[in-house]
Length: 361
Length: 228
Image (cartoon, rainbow over all chains, first blue to last red):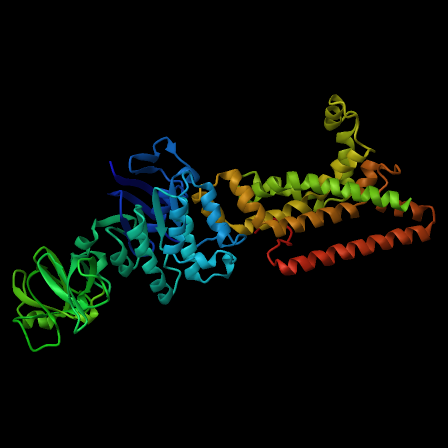
């Protein structure tokens, strides 16, 4: 059976300043990127360390049919077919980049082929760094080397512990495309710990939400992002993911048309070929609502939708409105006054306006 | 005469340093990493020569290695004979006496590495022995260099233990420090002065060289005493 099952029960009573307990039992798809999402202190890293065997806790780990840990069974970390990317690269300081990569290649149980080896270096853009000492690299470069090193072990499961958290925003933007390329190119199950909605929505296929050592939500990323009441939506950057296909290019105005189940929207042309499948992220703050269709507006995308849920922000003047368009859902962040003014309620029909220039894809 | 004593001293210090690196490195690794209750008593025993008068250590060794002592019985049974007043008796005594100077720098260097490089190595399929040789030893190298230099120099400089366990046999146990003492007893101040000057120059060069090395490797683990 192709899935990853992990169950742990931990109790740290009175260690340090606070007690921490974790009771987690998850089964996630054995392919694609699964994000383990939650605020700091929710137990994400602890869970990942337990799965890797770096932290010895009683529990069960079963990866695509192989038992890594169970009652009476504990395979030590160095015999688990995993790759691990630490929060800060954790390269060996006594070796240069080539040495760090060779450390993995030499010990891989079934080493990657030469062509894949070359491809890994290429995808992560580190071919030119090989002879540099590990300590002379920038944070972003170190992390890319660390990811390549983990891939060269040819793991059956890649565990990534907030690989971008120790980097500044510019570096994060520098690495994200590499991670997306890795996802697209190497068909490898990944558990990706993160507390950034942005990373989760760009990378993940599946999401597990943790809070205080408990699973509070779990599901396919698009589904979960379209929900009103997950912690994913409490942040300022609430938004949804829509899987769409580019169907048309408007050369004159530099726009492309992305079609999804239930509608289509125009996006700024970033060179995607017609016929490509894309994942677009529509932020709640870029979506506005109108009672009727307005043609005299700068907003290109106007779609009829049905209100399928409304959640008031308990601390502010805004509401998050969930809208059904065909099978897809969008979220809109609007003021409570507008909700009252437009008489919005579940079941009402509205026109959704999405700003083309703002949509990321 | 002087060269015989110096050559013996060099041989003794080299032998002791090699033995200490072989047994001291795993011991330092264990002391740095274990959470066992035994860490404290074992650490204290290793450090004891730092505070004990050398004569105390020499006295106990003399008894233990003697014909009726527990170690003496063993060496006789193994056909090695009795060790006191032999070169190998000096080696045993010096290994114990110089132990803290070798174990503690290595222990500090390993403790300073922390868990993280070892965890990274474990996720890269390196087992415990592999981790020790591929990560711990190379990363703790400055500490190991410091330990070798200090172990060697300290063995060269010892006197009390040697006098107790080795006596004063030319070419066998009469090391430089004993030779100087002999010269002074015999009122041969010129020879004593010559040998003493050689020792002073040796000590200065060794320590200056070590500090120079440590300037280049600031985390060499020069500090002594149990880890905090």
